[in-house]
Amino acid sequence: MITYNLGRILALDYGTKRIGIAVTDETKTISIPKPYILNAEKEKLNEFVKENEVEEILLGLPLGLSGQETESTKKVREFGAWLKETINLPVRLIDERLTTQEIRRTETNKELIDSLVAQKMLERYLEKIR
Image (tube, rainbow, N blue to C red):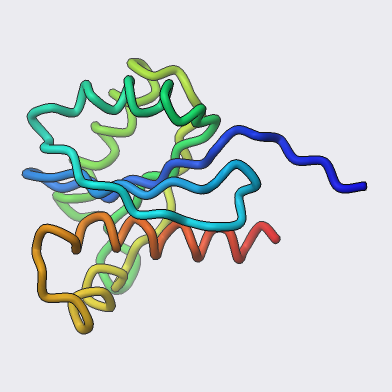
């Protein structure tokens, strides 16, 4: 018999204006994009985490093409530190190189892009841990 740890995984695509959001189902097999949260309202993430019984957070780390850190990388690391302090859950930084460009090739609605990027990062992570 297979048993599941029923906590969900939350993936975040941090941006200066919006934070894209995706979350798994209870069995960690499906990734579901959710409406983005404005960066100015990032405190809402705490409520989201509680309501969705999140046990781990993935945060996309925007590295340069050759893997170098950028100004955006620094901002994401600062946001990650804020998450750890505020929400008190494990925060895993994952490489998100080219993910946004990949989503923009097929999606033109700016309202959806951030959360679809988070979903793509989450799907890749789930594939890796299976």
